[in-house]
Length: 208
Image 1 (cartoon, rainbow, N blue to C red):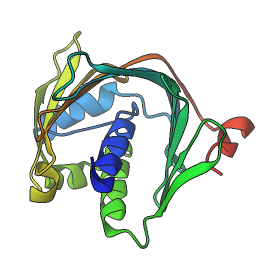
Image 2: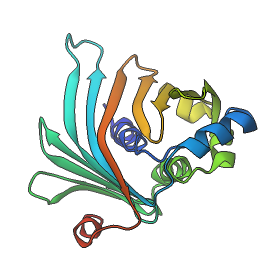
Image 3: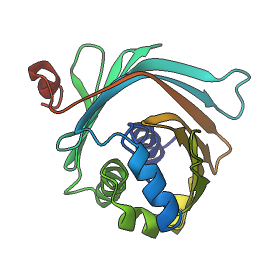
């Protein structure tokens, strides 16, 4: 797996933070948007199962995430190996178990990273116009039941590695499943989700 594929896979994991809004026409967009939490800070636990071609069993990882609308996303994996991914509008930093930076990329000098960051923050900030430009969005949001959305890339570059993303949730996104063009697939389930009006002092330090 090359550096760009690793970047896209890591960022797609971060796309799952539970403030995601999408649109399949104005009516569907409004129904989903009204039901989702719009808190500036959201956090919770995750479990990811990744099916990789050539492997009999899925690769399983667990950890927690922190999303702050004005700062970015911190995605911390605890199992099977400790690591942290910090993603903001300006940079991507990957840290090992000891907290030392193992990868650092500046979005100002990496056009690919900048484009991915723009897409991520469009998702997390409910920028419906940007999402509609990048994805064909279909789904349903029945009264009293979970809403479901399917996002199919319009952009040829994005479609070269990502076939589709499927989302399900209520007040927050509960599951995210995506299919890569390579045949690999991932499923992320969220739990223990909470929200807040602001970051705590300890949480703010995670973005440094």
